[in-house]
Image (tube, rainbow, N blue to C red):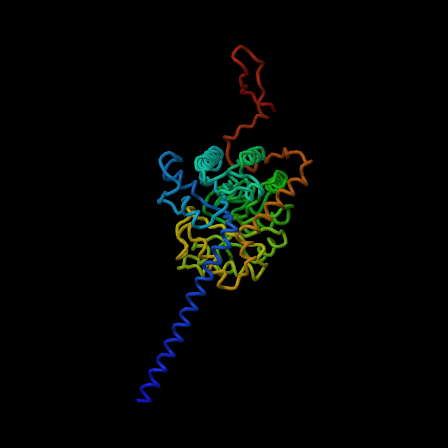
Length: 411
């Protein structure tokens, strides 16, 4: 009988210990979850890249009247999910396919800016902003515009400045195609300007003009040589709006260690991409896989140079548990579980990007006495003939029907 009582007592003790451990696990998980929510409620996320405007064009031909962005379920992004994800500011990508280069890229970009502006005007939850102060002041989800692909400006500094006036606040120098003045990480995906290596003299002028007007330089999609050249020139911090770590997934789209260290010296930021092709090289991925990229950059450069650029609605294939924009808190929960401090989390959520944006604006103020650049790209660096060059033509004298172009070239 005594043995039976002893055995029952031991069983009760083991049961109690198991319940305690289980309770601690559940309590710890709940604690991380609550901490993540608390941090994101007071420090709502600034995300560097979302391609919802691309899907609005692809699926609905930019006809906002046909959809409700609060509940749309054909995309990974809607306003309800953004709220659950504690997104406080979103860079919407004005993306134009590389196949439009040297054709109608400017028009297509204008149409994408138009749909972003209409979207942000039509929904009371959104507010278009164009400054760091605008992000901090709004009580709504701040809408910002990013140009994806330098081919959008058609090698024109005048076009660059007009896109800035329309509200664009960053431009990636390339997409998956070379421009006449910068090399992409996309390699041979497109036949445009295959001889381009790194950054040309005109490309350097684009960088300087972006510094002067206060447009953030985005190095996502650029080749490593282009990134290194820009880091050597830019007076302002630069960003990677949606990229990951080359050391963990060795594809050209990702950022190698020397450039990560260059970003630290430049005081810029790498906004980590969630796409599993970039974080796991097409292998299965989960939240932990993504968190490894955050840990890697933190250990190499420090936590001040990291942000978030989910790339939702621009690609297919996201880590298990991070299928749409409502899932951001789960990443923050994982980072807290790994020992990230609250102040470090606040940095990746918004403070790191705001620091970069403010410094870009300060450089603009420092350069305000410089005149707009009038440099033009050399004609022999362009590979198409339909570009009108007014310098080669003279005009006839005015008559009743107005000016007429002469077919006779000057010289």
